[in-house]
Image (cartoon, rainbow, N blue to C red; front, side, top):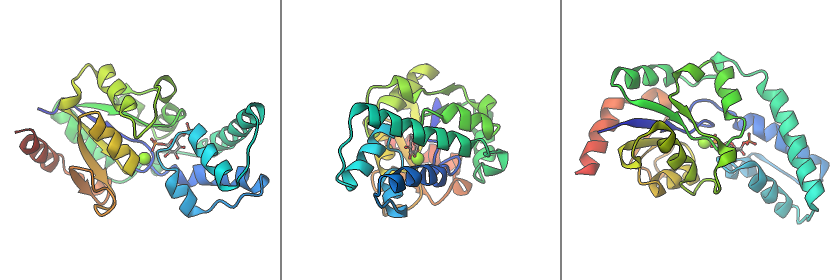
Length: 220
Ligand code: G16
Ligand code: MG
């Protein structure tokens, strides 16, 4: 049985990648490191510290701890300014009807985002009341592709991981779901999300009946 569906945020419920991109690009510019859309793709689902490490490595730049912390803060300050503009119109099509279908089936809804700003974005989107549990990225030891955040959300929802379905748009996120021993639904390109058990091109195509059928079949 499906006890819960646990969603990723960026790329599944809304597109904050563009805002992360603007904020990281400002940092990279200052450091004279080129940072383009292709780089940003690689940072999807990657936590803040590891994203900065990626940018510094690209520029062959080493910085001390204090400078590293300052850059993280600068990036986040700008990101916070940008997400201040997020509103319910930024919610991806299909999310509300998907959540309604889950509620109707008495399936719990969880959030497993790598973002420490996830709760803020969720409230800006106007959907916080629809979640049974929102994971805290700051409290888990290992970020995606480690299973930690998905496991902590299952725990917070008081359900067993094997009865959970995870929904992700990033390769590292799908790996995290599979490592957590959950059924993985990918949102995006099935040529890229090859480890997912089922893939939909976007949330508007997410069909809970189809997901449940595939999940039940995979469990037998
Ligand atoms: C998101 C984004 C990443 C971002 C990370 C951490 O992950 O995809 O690009 O670096 O959160 O964000 P913050 O700096 O706000 O803690 P997810 O898991 O929601 O796709
Ligand atoms: Mg994502």
